[in-house]
Image 1: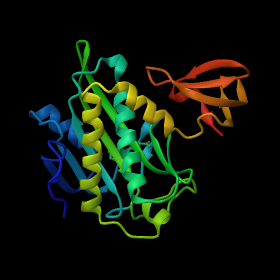
Image 2 (image 1 turned 120 degrees about the vertical axis):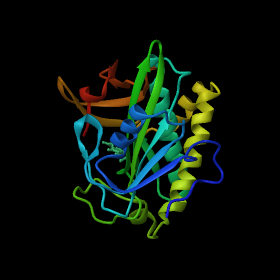
Image 3 (image 1 turned 180 degrees about the vertical axis):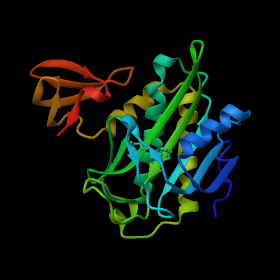
Length: 251
Ligand code: BTN
C-alpha cells in the first residue's frame, strides 16, 4: 500500500490513491479545477486504463506492475518562456532515481524520455497552465516501467528487465518523490544553469553522429544541445538547426 513519504517536505504529503482511473493527469486536473489543491499533491493508481502520452499518444501500463502517477506543482517562479526548465528538472530526477536503482546505462532522450540501454523505461506528460506572465500550475504525469516484463513494442524496457530483480512499488515511489523534490527545489532556488549542464551531460546521442529525419528527409547530424525554449539543436551539414518535438525524428 502506498504511504506518505517520510523524507520529503511537500511532495506526496497529500497522497491520493485510486485503484483504477482513466488517467492520473486527468484526475489531478479535475481535482485542481474543483478545489484548492496543495502543491506536491500526488495522485496514483494501480490501473490506468486510458493513460495519455505525448503527441496525443496512449500510454499503456500493465495493472499493478508499474508506477503511474501525477504530481501537482505550482512553479509560479517560472515565466512561460522558462517552462522547459521544469522538464529538465523532472527528467533529471528520473535519471537520478534510475541510476541509483539499476547499473545499466541511463540516458535522457530529448525532450523527456528515460532510456535504459537505449530502450524507453519512462515517459512523462507535463501539462502547464499559465496565469498572466507566470506559470500557475503544472501537472507532472509519470509513467515508469518498473516490474512489467513484456511490452507491445521492442523499444521498451523496465527496471526489472534491466536489473533482473523485482522492485517494491511503494518504496520506489517514495524514493522517486524525494528525487523529484530535490531537483524541483534546485530549480526553485534559481540553479537553472547547473540543471541545464546536468541535463546536457545525460542527453542521449549528444556529440555523436546519428541519423535523423526532418521535413527535408533523412540526414546525419550531431546533437549539440537545447535552446532556452527546449528546442533540440542539431548540427546538420555544418549548419546549426533547432527543432521542436514534431519537427525531427530519431532514426
Ligand atoms: C509519453 O512518453 O508519451 C508520456 C507518457 C506519460 C504517461 C503518464 S502515466 C501517469 C500520467 N497520466 C497519464 O495519463 N499520462 C501520464
